[in-house]
Image (cartoon, rainbow, N blue to C red):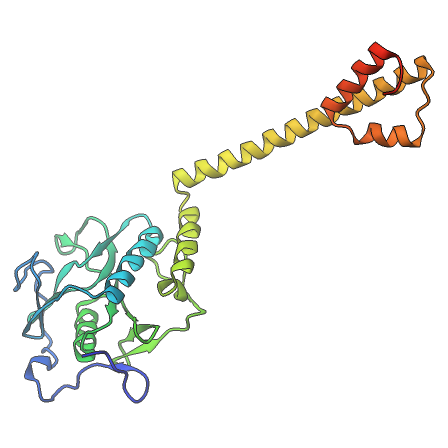
Length: 286
């Protein structure tokens, strides 16, 4: 079933009670370890509030957007953080599922002795049930994930989960998305537009002083300086040649009228050298 917004334009969490007992909110309790799974890792199994699901392979709209999301986020990750794709997380006693892409601190959390919890999580929404997407966001938030974003492919929207409203709020595509996990604020539209994503990657790599990009910029600067030096050197040689030719003309009694002056000023180093050699051999203006 395709995601459909509520009448207020927001995708809401499932109500506390309803037709499906599997989607009732879990009671408050201590959380299980992140990697203590109740589904089989490296399979398509997931569990959302007690309901065992099969995560199916994606269609092109989802798969293509997922690939581009990983591309742009990978360049933006701040040092000390790591990005993951389809990272399985035990978010609650009755929930064990993966988000499409997430970012977390690298290494081991000293408070728990296990990997760090995701801080930033992304879901690509194309064919998922809106109840399932909202339930996942609520469980992740309850577990401690700071921010959950959803990219609604068919609607062309980027939304962020609101803990207070228990709903997804649409972000302004012209706005910037900033987070401590990112080295540079990311334009929201770059999560939807391929060309903007490419530009955003370049700026992010520049902000992180990526060695290859630093080397490329230094090479460009050096080439510019060398070109400037060569231009200066050539101009100095041309000035010297013009002065020598003018002196030779004076000694040879050759008149440098306005036309010949203009011709002289328009010659480059090679042309001036050829004129000098002609005057030396023929002792007359060409």
